[in-house]
Length: 426
Image (cartoon, rainbow, N blue to C red):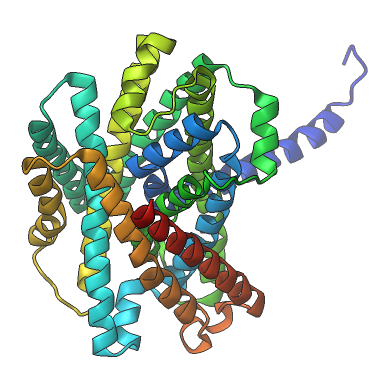
């Protein structure tokens, strides 16, 4: 060779590089097969309830509550990881495990609480999609509500073609939300030094406790704690411990990716509200006001992106709410109602309230308060069951996991109790 390179040396270098590249591609393909369940779950963490509380937090208290979004997300990651582990190890969802382990009166109570939670959840999520249609296309609220139910039924119906189909639809909707808020952040031009500071340094004033509690209550959602243990079953291949551990490692990557995207979207909501509304001295306490105010402040592109994000959030979270409702209604007491009847039970109350002329924001507040009551019915059974070696075997919770779980439960319940107190006394 004219350059003096030994062809054998070149070949010896090229072959290992090619093998490394092929191994990396193989690993990525293996990981891709497991991605999906956490993305469906993450939708509940960027639902219309989050829109309302994050906008209120940013517009009233500037960047100071971004840390609440971070810590709420860390708690959610912990709880979703336990739920996923339960489904992976046992092949049985949390609601069905409760039905097997607890007494009939306890399960009847859990079923009642979670049925109310499913209805309350759907109210908030249905409201978001309804407002999205209304704000984007000026469709009357009642007609928007009927349209939301129709689209939700179609997406959930896609499950008959496989869970992967629904996962792709939901991931697409999450991408729409993320891109919409990327546009919002770009237009808002926030103070990134302040954003970084308040993400890492907690601060809480007496006037911001209610909003901070609401941000937590809107983030940690009971229905997806049950749903995650159901969703991972599709990818479960055997009862083998080694296979379960491998599946769990993959699912943790899925959870970290999906939940951190949800964190970035929630943080972006607070950042945009602080940069646009707080800086102008405009405290905003409703989704409609936020949409209306964005046009004169940032232009049509911003208000359009906001409406599109809200619509995508409402449709995706309505779909997830309907799926969770089906899962929970069947598991506790073995009440195997027809699928469409289960969907109707969780969907119709929201439409009835809208038809009766209830204020959409009041419906949203009522739903969040109801979910505060429902949280213990999801978290406590999850910790009790995943801590049992006779059920979880070698993958039962370690003592440290149980301690962390107890601290999180205490904190969530305390803050939600405070939320309820302040809701009814202020």
